[in-house]
Length: 320
Image (cartoon, rainbow, N blue to C red; front, side):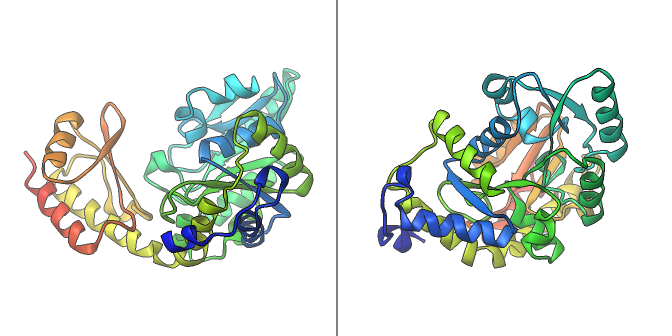
């Protein structure tokens, strides 16, 4: 990956002249079955660009209460797009279809325009849960006539978990963003794909948000390696996560974690004192974080070997 970055052919992406960026965008658009794509610095920016492109001030976006766009983007939707969310239950990782249907009817009754339905796949807050194909089909059906956007930051974990091609998941949405900097292990960058007219508008919104880059081929080269070479190893991360989940469940039987439900690379569980637990892990060389005042999160990735997982399991099982 670093060799590809060092040897990358570059140009000025502001004018569409960077050949490596163009190849990355074209390849991503091809594998997710969309007409075009743009490269941006982060997943958060990709989501914010999508919102600004699809919506207008005062319109409504139907989304899950716990998805990244709602909880972890610093109220960016309100600041950048002046939209309001209509939030529905996504506790299982998928939007509750009956609540989406009810919310659409309610917004219509009050004369408010629903400009977008948005969801996250995989769903980080529920432990990296991938959407079922049936769930995708149902949201597409319910949202007839309304654009659907997928926050697919970890789309390729969903792909690996379900053993399907990316387009078998993304064909149910109008636009999709995905990060090459998470499980795919590139140092930076995300992509947003959709219809060509949408992407033309999205390029303007990207520039407004400060995401237009110049000789970005240096980092886009890493993105190409990530998409072409790193996808096949994601099941290894998923297996490692199930091992961690088993050790955690054995050590903390009441933590609310069911190892059989860990399907990708994220392990989330309840702990009575997350700060002390995380501090202990760090002292032993294991890094973890929190997603709430009561819940700990661990994520497996390409830099964590099987031997490291075994060591982490021993450290967790001996934790105070």
